[in-house]
Image (cartoon, rainbow, N blue to C red; front, side, top):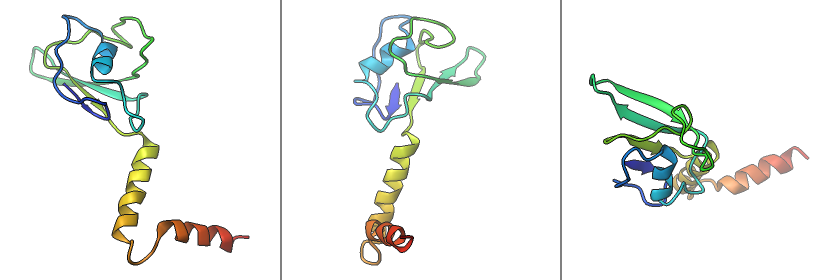
Length: 116
C-alpha cells in the first residue's frame, strides 16, 4: 500500500523484492505537496512488531537495505505533506473559516504596510 501525497494511492502489485522507490513510481510519483525527504515505511515483522523507517524517495538510489530497501508483502508506505503545503492548507482552512470576518491576505498586507 502507498497512501498520502502520491498521484495514485492504494494497493500495488509489484514484482517480488521490488525496491521501495519502485512503489513510489508505481503510485504515479509524489505529488507537488508531498515530502519526498521523509517518507515512512511501516513493516509488520515476523514477530508481530510494527517497525517504522524514514526514507528519502530519491528515485536515483540503487537497491540498498539502508536507503532503498526491498519491499515485503503488507508493507505500508506513507507520504505526508511537506511543511510548506501543510502551512498553505492551514491558511486555506483559516481563510475559509474567517472569510466573512477577516481576509488573511488583507490582514498580512496590512501588517506589512503597518511596518513601513
